[in-house]
Image 1: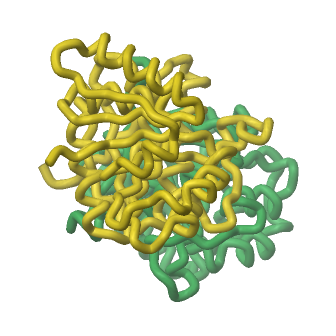
Image 2: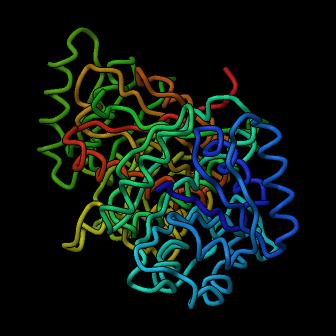
Length: 224
Length: 224
């Protein structure tokens, strides 16, 4: 049976970029959106861009979440908690949720080079709190810039996967490996998402100061 | 007139590593320590290791701070505020203070893979608060592992320099450029030290999980 990857907020720049990379790698994608029609349209564009046997459909977020084996959260932080509360009844046990959300201060009118303090510690830990225990949670992909993801370039970025659940960690690491130029790294516990999320702010600041669009991060001194 | 770089806490692993690299690059170093005798001994070992015309002396922290044109803080976070309070009367105007301190939770008996919350936001911002306005402050070098610094290997790590003072930023970036394998990057405002300091926790976690000693970071997608 084929696994389905549902990408909530998948019509946005980060979500559609991830959808593109994974559909291109042969994965079956469901784009989720508040607006089912926009999701269907984004999925159509995705199939058209990739051609051949690309598998991408669109659905309203709740339907996408209910049908996904892996569900990737790519919504703005301002809508993160509300969406998870709304989705409470839909999750099937065993779903793997991968949170890519970054609580940028831009969400409340300040700048994207600053972070919001999240009471639980990070967006990912907020997700863990709002999801049923039967769902596995990992945090990953926060540092991949949307413009790099949308292109056909190598993303040139390591992906730190943070989770307290081995299965979720393995799946997120495997999916990172399907993005050309990404390298999956074991980022440790879910609580480390606090640090990984904040690296996104740092990368946005580097993009601004160095007038580039796709600053990324690599870790040195590791095996291989 | 030759500039003097005073390294407070310079008998510790981080401080002595930086002292080694800068003395090797021809800089005039004063090792500072609570214990003047230990500082003198560390300086003697440093001169011996480098040989030739290496310039390194030792002094008690307060004397080192008073005499330094550039003063680098490499003390454990647990002694950071107390030292800066003690040093209040000694600073000469125009001194550049570079803070390398990381508020690891290990300082209060938890683990080095976690951070302490600092009321001011970061160790560097705590330093800024405790230093007179006539002193310039930058945050840098937090992510360089002590074992790499102590060796003759390339450090293979970018150095993000965060400061609200252009002169301090320039000097810290110049000093980063004197460490083989380090690359100085403009890390933006001093407040960004919050993120850069926390990356050290992440690197310590990677060292543990991947059984290495010198994990570092590189930023990709930047000019050159």
